[in-house]
Amino acid sequence: MDLKKNIGIFADFPKAGISFKDINSLILNPKAFRYAIDEMAKVAKALDANIVVIPEARGYIFGTPLAYLIGAGLVPVRKPGKLPGEVTSESYDLEYGSNIVEIQKDAIKPGDRVIIVDDLLATGGTMMAATKLIENLGGEISGIITLIELTELGGRELLKDYFVHSIVTYPY
Image (cartoon, rainbow, N blue to C red; front, side):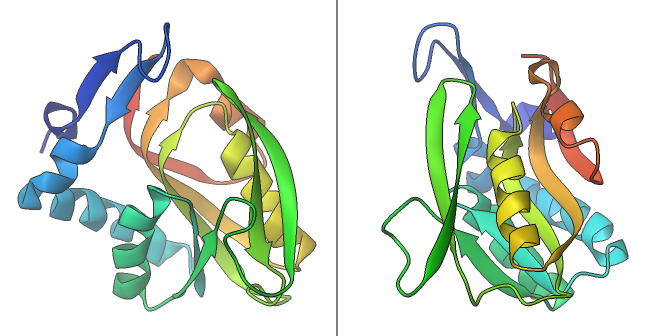
């Protein structure tokens, strides 16, 4: 299945110069959504992870069914102030700004094998911040899986020390 036919592209969103890849039409199509999750699951099963980490917010869409399919726990990485209890945080840059993400300190245990799942790999800032959070808590990164990769933005190079798999790639 050609998933690109199910991904909308919006020029100059959210600001001028950005070519936004919109997954809403893909997740609306049950066959395309199932295909995307099944393709991710093929990769994830070989990574032998016990935890799937999902960055807010669109990582939730793909990581939740994936964790279910591979029998792994699910850990959200969220924006500041959204998680109760003790958290640890990491700042990062993205293609059109900067942000901070947090994870609960007790969510990852030493030795946990973790897959990070998100909708998009662009500059790699969100993923690198997530890897730092996980590793600082003693987790091991089994791999990173994304639906879309914007190849010209260098995210894969930033994450060169990790296994990265993207289902669909685009130039920026």
